[in-house]
Length: 78
Length: 321
Image (cartoon, each protein chain N blue to C red):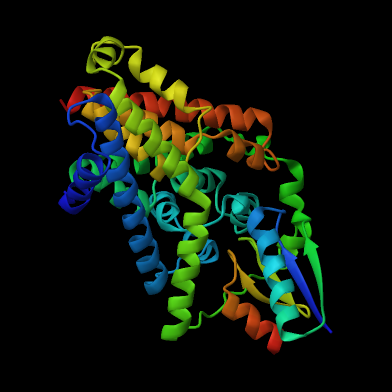
C-alpha cells in the first residue's frame, strides 16, 4: 500500500490534489492511504513553502500547486 | 488594438442580436462581447505559453536568489520576482515563514507579498490591450515602487515585533528543488493544467469585472463621472482607493472596469489607484496573513498601502493629462 501525504493549509487546490490522487489510484487499482497535513509547523518541517505539496512514502515529490494528472499517475504506478 | 474582436462584437451585436447602434443597451452588449472574447482569448494564450516555456519561478527559487543579498539588490529583486512568480494565495503563510527563516528581512518579504497580487504578466498584457503599453508600463512602474517603498517603511519602523511569536520558533526542513520533466508531452500537459487551474480560479472575477465595465460603459452618462471624478475633485482619488479596499478581485478582473472608466474621462491616476487598491488590499488575504501577523501589523500595512495608492493617483493625475 502506498502512503500519500498532501501538505497544505486546507485550500481548494489541496482538496483537489487529494481528490485527484484518490481518483487516479482507483483507476489504477492501487491501494493508497491519503493523509492531509494542515499543521503549518509540520508542513514547514518537510521543507515545503509553497503548497500544495505531495509526499509519497515519506519522500517529497512535489510542491507549489496542483500536480498534473500525468504526475499523479507516475506516483501511483511507481 | 485587436480589431478582430471588435468586428466580431459588431457582428454579434448588430447583425445577430439586431440591436440598434448608439443605444445604451447596444453599447453595453458590444462592450461585453468584445471584452469577453478578447480577454479570455488573451488569458488562455498567455497562460498556456508561460506554462509551456515554464520559465518556472517557484517561491523556493526566489527565496534562494534573494537570501543574503544587500538591500539594494534584495528589494528590487523581491518586487520584480513577486510580480512574475505564480503561487496560490493559500501559500502566503508558508511562503512568509520560509522567507523569514532564510533570514530575508521582514521588509523584503512584505515587498514581495505587496507586489505579487498587484502585478502579474497576464494582467500586464491584458491591461496593455485595453489602455495601451505606455499606461500599462506606468502601472507596473508604480506598483513596483509601492512594493519597494512599502517594504522599506516596514523595515525602518522595525515591525518584526508584530509578527506572531510562533513564526520565529518554527523549524524548517531543508527545501528540495525538484527537477521538472522537460519532455514536450510533459510541458504540454503542464501548460494545459495551468490554463485549467488559473482560468478556473479567476474566470468569475473577470466575468463580473466585464459585466460591471459593460454597465458603466453603456448606462452611466459621462456627465456623472465629470461631476464626481474630475481631476479637480480632490476627494476622487482617496474615494477610489477606499472603495477598492473591501472589494476584491484578481488584477485581470479589474481591467474591464479600468477600460470603461477611462473611456468615460475619469483621469488615469484615479483609475489606476482604484485598480491597485482592488487587487492588492483584500479581506481574504488579510485573514490568511493574520495567522502570521498581529493585527497592528496588518493595520499598518493597510495604512501604508492606502497612502501609497493615493499618492500614485495624485501623481499620475498631476503628471499625465
